Length: 297
Image 1 (tube, rainbow, N blue to C red):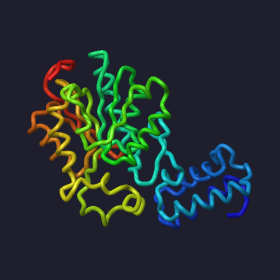
Image 2 (image 1 turned 120 degrees about the vertical axis):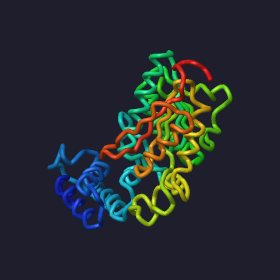
Image 3 (image 1 turned 180 degrees about the vertical axis):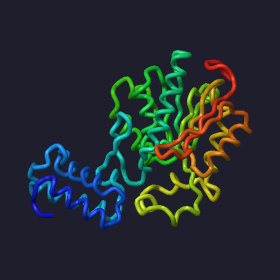
């Protein structure tokens, strides 16, 4: 790419990304130029792109044009108030999951208001962004984030380290399968159980974009042949791990919302509701264990 100003560099990058089939070429081009030059091209469009930044942009652009996710190319993303690191081999957080985090923040605030404290548990944490968002935004919580994949918990621990002191101290990162990471005293004491688990059926693989199929770990995408195996396991466990009045919040396959809601009701959870994602699709399930908040099971 020839040395030029940032506006021209962003325009050239967007054209190349569009030709490569990238869904959001203009936005991605701006992020790549900022990553290479250290400034948003919209703020300094006439700033010169020096030779070093041009070489860096060329490298980043080649990776994105090859359909590597933008978050992996830049090494980070934006998620609510956080800027978590992203890394190959760990599920990349999506913008719609900010809605799930918002539901968890609201539930945690309500629990702290009712009892003075709240235990929030997030299995399948990946980068850790949901649990870390709760810790950053809700004083008085204790948060356990976990994943079966050590690569994910290593990255979650790295993102935890970037939090402020009080929020960082509120979070513990554990490695293990789903809710096996909980100690006996935590079972029946969870105020908020929140997760974005694998929920796609394995038959969806041919329909996924190159960014997803080629870079997100398949164990974080696919629940199994049915897709909702992990969702069902978490719903079944919620009855035992939640405190009375505690809330379970799960991201779902939008095709399975009604079925998941019926299952939650069938196993004895109350207040079952589906919440829409940024496109209006029913992607999030909320339900609670019967009983007054603050009681112990």
